[in-house]
Length: 479
Image (cartoon, rainbow, N blue to C red; front, side):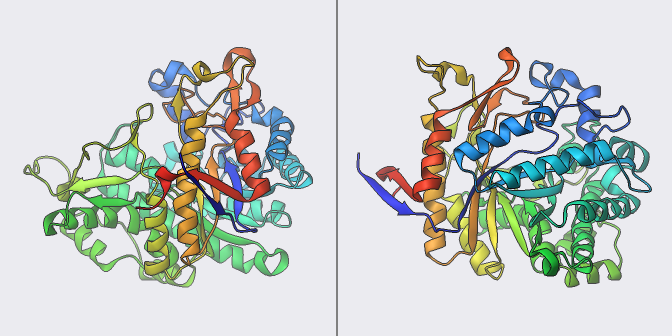
């Protein structure tokens, strides 16, 4: 089969990501320091695959030096993770720092830097403290927003001299979509207006923390930048027909532009207010808050892209007896013949990288951005071990290669994309999925004391980083 080679720009980031709650485990955590994810796990453990969750995770809290050694061996230029808000403080109201956990973060950051890996730190990756969720309703509360800003200030004071890449949230739309819009996660409450309030409060929290960041002059003092990590689902209509195109536009408005527009442009789409008012789901806001968004847009954004989202116009009438849901305007479309990852149930369509990159260039001022997550989860990977016990994950190599190919095509055409961060550095716990599907360059062997081993993809990635040359088969050549 024919191949082609693509050069990777010299300063293009090639790293990997995991979050705090998905790797650290509970060792050293105080009983009152549960996050929302810990709360969900404790109250609904049976929905997590084999009952495995954040309690054990990968024990990164104790084994971070070992793992960072693997990062150095692979040659990662950057590593993105989070600080667990629920563990960083012992008093959330007064922002009293837990010195034990803060010292661990200190050591982890220093270890990364000592090994030539640039840390990228997110302030919240679903880790809102459980007590704030139970007492105030989590991100439905403006008071929780104020506490988040206090927390951010403590983090910036502690690590601002060493961390150059900061992010407020990872995938800020996800938790409330699962809990309050689709009601498929604990505590299973369908409340679309509450969903919108969570959305707005997180958008506002990003602007407030950006303002704090600039007040503290972290860019001027240390050359740091601040942004947010979003997960826009690249949305395709079933057809070119007006009704299908409208369905895709509406999905994009409610799930993508609700975060992209205020973070980058400083304003919500005007149509969003019209629709919220029409369906009685308008979030509580003030004009001062809208001014805050206008004046405090992000320096850059990370985008998590895994699969396309396909929709069509509704073919059945909406049940008027149910609360409003954006599906009032669309239905999901199942594309015949699509290429699938059968383990995760997601379509594989690498062109999403190019299409989203062109959108960032053409609609969002060509702001600086990067891929913050992209990867492939596969079940029962041990069946792909060779005689030496190494996982031969050629499927992951192909997946990464084809997505990078489309991304680099966009870069060649002027997209201001600065890098690619693989999800994930290592196998890790995912919500409900636990360790069922594995994403890592590094295997975590649960049957053998969570011991680590590099997969074939790790060595492929290492070669890519060193050579700055991507070799892809002709099936990824652009049609």
